[in-house]
Image 1: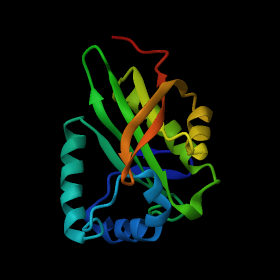
Image 2: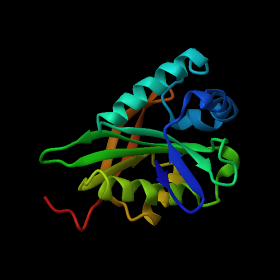
Image 3: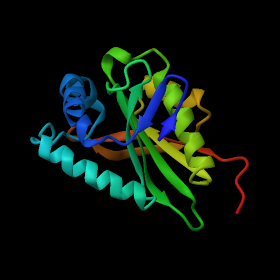
Length: 182
């Protein structure tokens, strides 16, 4: 769990499944342009019960943290998600950050707050050296969040990810832990 001033970022529990389905159902059109094509059964409860089991195992193994954003003022309501995945140890000590936010919660600073919390978690709890995050060039909101959080552009990746049915270019960014020690 990651706690910030206004958010609790945590793994979902079985009681949260209807709220997960509500979140994605209400925000599907908003999220789809920046997401892989959603599977036809994406909003089925059984899919999410399985997802929760997989996510708990992934977290227990230290391989990833796929969580949802819950505002402290409405602790049962999901307003977004945040994932730390592709965790690599050894010489790399890195992970990849991904996130999304409800259409009606844009512009309130929630994602900047969540990304700051996630980076602190990756550096202080997981003791990683680097967090990478990538965005499509037209996603100016995501670019601004990452810039505010101290991520630096490392390059461009043409046709990087298959998003919404087509290969999309991405801007590659990362932030490194200035106080990392072996």
